[in-house]
Length: 269
Image (tube, rainbow, N blue to C red):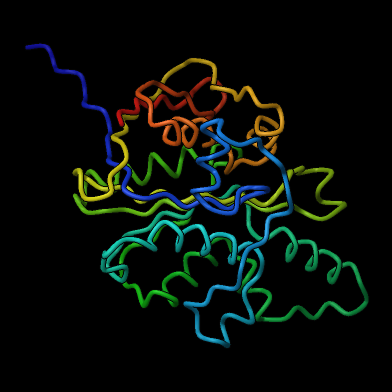
């Protein structure tokens, strides 16, 4: 007997958070991505995470603030028990500013590195601070796949959703490196997005997505400043999906993943 083809990974998008240059939240991003307002880039400003205790709040770097802000946006209007919510944090690298600081320190005569700065430099710092802020004991994954980190994070979240049959929060984020690291790893800006994914439709659900790996060109954006953002920040590779969700239209989008392998998403409002 011939084996049946494996079913696609699917999920229902329940809530979204966005923070990036000129995109302060999901409602403002919807207006831009749906074509109702022009896109005007502006510096990304991540507020202090008020859910953290004061001592931890003072210590966190800009990258952690960026990730937690997008995550909290996505959960602001939900009634979930956040402490039991599984999370996936996807970033192409760690905190670029702290990496630069460490390199400068190690190249100086005084090579003493602050333990506080060190624990903010690790790749799972945002995941750890999220667990502290939300008093969470649920599974949390931190992963990196270079420029394909958004797609890798989405695949991981969809896989966990299938196994756990409970909501999963995906947070994808990246921030720029200072020079001279920027010349070797040019990330254009700070950008983060969060998708609250559920295994079944619930109140507030905006769309169903189904994912499959394909060999096809990734989608681009017609607006050149937005396309520059998509190309320039790994976390912003998800903008074609966000545009489709903002427009509330049925269709297929292809997200950049690995060389020669992309992630196709069927979006059904």
